[in-house]
Image (cartoon, rainbow, N blue to C red; front, side, top):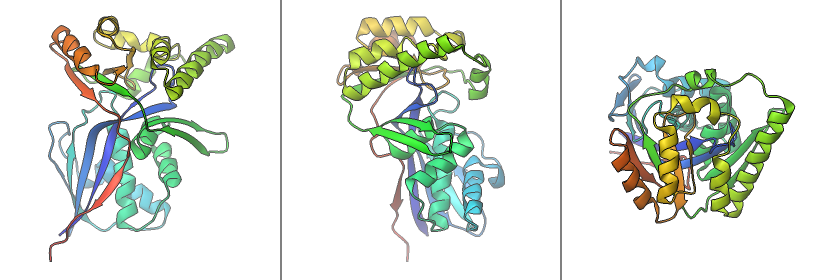
Length: 302
């Protein structure tokens, strides 16, 4: 008996200088098809998914169980068929989408009626920062900040006349490895300069000045100078994408994928030129996902 499906979009984060605060939902998806069962079972149906672990060690189950426990609820056993377009460990928010899916799984099974703010708080506690999880939850472009009192503020923009081109290499890069190369501290002057770049970039994105936004995206001082050596063809991709007409090109999340922003309708040209130059990469034209995570009630067999 089919119960429901959960669909969660991929995401890119940072957008250059919006470190750990800017995220964007993209039209690659993680989908769960959930059925009642006598015991927990996960079935993976995608080349992008790893071998299935024991159900109790599955990130989606762990997240669902953690969410249920917060509200003193118990999960009913289910069979979960998992499909995914999102490559793992490539900087496209695969773990964030799984976390959002797990929270929604508990929300549905335990009838918790969680508000978006509650889902985001739980996801941020698990992920450690809200940028990817907020984008996958809400959809669109999101700017987030967790305040000293724990509150998470979210700004969302869902209209953008942009195409997004991602350059996905064959290698993986774990987020924890990409964070190891970052400095532990910045001086006040360094932080002020880096924040100023981020402020202008965000203002330009929100106002629709994509040419300016692209320029500032490539001026990040928080993480890209330290991570660039970990990214295959980093300089080549930025230079050739700009020549082909991209506004700007940055590391997607922690990498190793890179992403270009172009005017709507121009993505095909940029993708074609870069694919010729990067035969070992998978080059995709993506769109902004505007709806975020959603649940579909499937037809019950009677």
